[in-house]
Length: 400
Image (cartoon, rainbow, N blue to C red; front, side, top):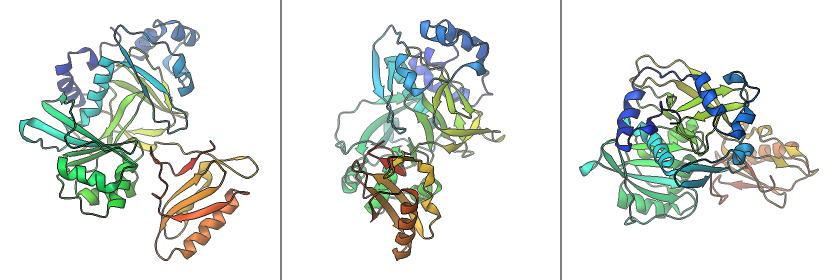
């Protein structure tokens, strides 16, 4: 058995009870030396990688570009999933059926604590905002997920779909839970311009992108319900979730060794055996802090500092310009912005501002010409005017 401490090695019906009780218990101590030895004897890849390593903190972080070289070793069927590629590089993730099911259970762990009142027969309906433009019909064939004494039914809506189409599905399904890409839910709310608080939504639980204070306020106002964020990655599974009681982010530290380093977040999922990840590096930034003493949930807590990476822009001389160079939010009266570079090199700066916008446009144009020389540009009112699926990034480029 890989790591017997993981709840994955229990029978499926026991997962919810185990994840619930362990979240309420004192922190489980993981023997890092033992963990290192398990990886050292796993296969030739890790044997060679760890040959000169004497301690846990000497282990070199595993980069996304190295993931394909990690051997797959499994006794059951293996499925492939591609990461979203927010950083510009997609990774192929390989897991067995049982690993995928437990990954799903771990993602549902916060729902054991969230204020969700199930419908008769303990049914919870959820609408998930995903990449794409398709909206599933209300009468779709369901593949129910049984967890914690509840049956979860799922509908999916593409974030690039027409807001009216998504709204029609919401009216028919009346989900208790909204999940999915943060910017997709925000975009839907800001483009629909209709009341949403009467649709029966009890919890909005976005993920996939850092939830800004502005976005959180927008969602809370639109649905008049708690907005509880979640943090994870396709490669590692669900790493942290916002608590309904203390509102901090609790780390699933009993299933994933999560570390904060100068290089980013390092994650070692203990439940992934087929293609195991040892100190897998994510280009995010977190900070651990002392847990709230009065919170029921005893898992350690973190603050999310950065949870996405923007693209680089190429100027007229062919030089790369860092996305950190753009600080348009300092412009007085500007509410939101999104800079995109076309494959022709032209720049389009999408923005929302207080009216009138004449002064705002002058300031934006001046800053843009100063930071990126030698490129034509266009200013466009409306940050959602760029029809682009996927996670939201403030700076995007078709050239990088």
